[in-house]
Image (cartoon, rainbow, N blue to C red; front, top):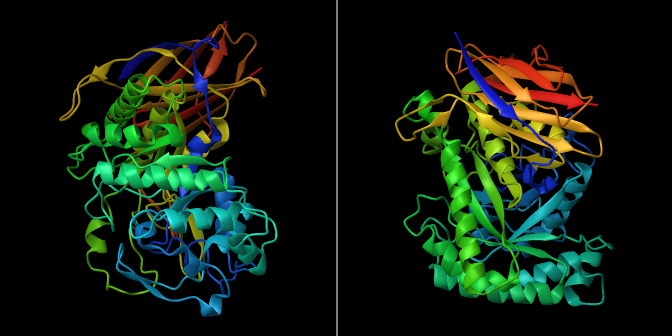
Length: 500
């Protein structure tokens, strides 16, 4: 069977400029993300600093522009001073967030070195759980001040003459969550966040700050939390954060693939709240969104309950992703791009081993999970301006959603390289989708490539000893007389690239 969908793509229908930071990721001191993930001295692929070169190559393939660090829940109990200076003198600490032992072998300077090697900026989080204004302003001074002060001179003494010039900073993590060390009410958090923000910007006025939004839109304090926090911080921050994770716990595929509609609603709600505070304050400033944790996360929940406490870098949150997870990740990327006018930073959580597109074996190889591919395609081909396509698609209803379009799509126009990319998911479980697109505004453009990720087994996975989920280039998209025609296979992620 075939279903039909159509759309019109016009270069004038602009949503907004895509900030490259929308393709960011996240490394937390959690599980094997750092130790055994990016860093494994003694590994055959380790460089002179102990960083795994095979992992670095995969990160570079993803073109990750920015990485949030060092947490996450971890940051709310972290003393950044533990991770600088001679490694032999660094203390071991109990990490209460994940009930492990942190060796502090890797800290701020080493992570900055790694980020440089993979061509990424760092989105640095400060501890507003057990710490506050003093530790945060000192960290900004240590990282960003040139010289001639205690903390900047200490950085120089530690072997880093040039400042790190970190531009983007998170004011704590998930402070609305009772699981967080130093959990606060919205008023309590808003007060500490604004005073910390002021002090950090007095040290370096060029930085941009992210205030903590809700941990997800189903938190009991959601909406009220954002409004209260922005009442306090509006004039001193640039972003409010959003976090969300999804999982197919009920084995209901139609409902699972519709969960990006929940993400859409979350984004629209937070934009509305931010703009309400803007109106209330009669402000000319617009607060943008940092969706700095998003992914599928549920596979490893049971295994994580069995981990021995206080071990070093145990395998935690090691979800092995399926083909159906890759489809939802594709739709979540589409959701971010559809509001590229306001979502300016986003971080796929996380990057290596911990709910990640990249997995490693200790002492062994590194490999790509199923979700690696939509993330890579979006990051590599999704630079430029997001376009608001006019879409007509058949729809379905599921347990939690009504009017779910079978076609989930967004288009990106890169004027500089004269390229157009259409990202599209066909959510239909049995039918091919025949897609017609009016592309007359792109005169003289032809199809360069039609990449397809498809699999007859929705539970297919990639692991170090088998690779079942990989894209192919055999899609049939073609342009003739300003009309694009393509068949999108059932349950597929598609990347249709046009060029002049």
